[in-house]
Length: 273
Ligand SMILES: Nc1ncnc2c1ncn2[C@@H]1O[C@H](COP(=O)(O)OP(=O)(O)OP(=O)(O)O)[C@@H](O)[C@H]1O
Image 1 (cartoon, rainbow, N blue to C red):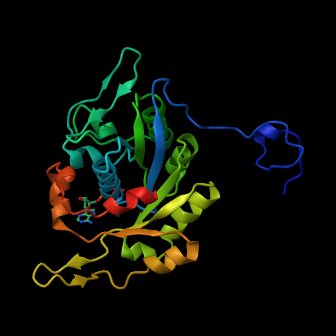
Image 2: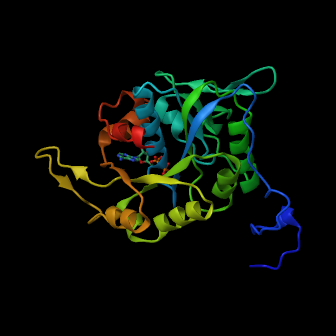
């Protein structure tokens, strides 16, 4: 422990002499917003199906009758609007507060891709700008009576996800990984980051876990044996689901019809979150 200088504003220790609360970076919600629960969806690296999992969780919540929202915090690789077939530009109210887009089934969505002149325009912004956008999506958006919000977090364990962890009051996170990541330390880095930040880990989703033979229905683990149960045991966190590689999911995302997918891959987990 470092020696106490009695400058509590810059000290990370919780000593008995503490006179000021630690710096709170949390971004306040807009005055007319209400969000009951906020769940971050994270991955140790990009491309593992974090956005797919976020979309499926929101669809599952919506099917349960909850007023669900998605904050697309994956600013440089936003894929949520595409999955829901959203292409119109976001509007703001007279106070400059963002009004979320609404999917066909009533999920509220904000994403950088709904603000660009062209959807194909790359977002080449430095970390602090990216983090600031996510903060604004939280605090400068009208989130009306949201029961549960899913935040598609920026991938990885660097500066941007760190800032988001500190500025959006997450009730917990869901970690997404593929079987290959589970062998390595990438997932464990994400889990340990959440632990270090005192954020509850609600569970792990293993994506691209297997493929189902279209002829005999046999499940084939193309990436080899799954290690998810071992990791879940090690960190005492539940396994929320194992998603197959399902061409219907890819097609539904490409066509903007993720809400029409019949398979109830994550519908059972909503009550546990
Ligand atoms: N279980 C699955 N079955 C079929 N296709 C999938 C599945 N999971 C993801 N995909 C497809 O893989 C691609 C990457 O998925 P997704 O965008 O969800 O990854 P991501 O982790 O959010 O990526 P990034 O972090 O780079 O934004 C998408 O085209 C998506 O449709």
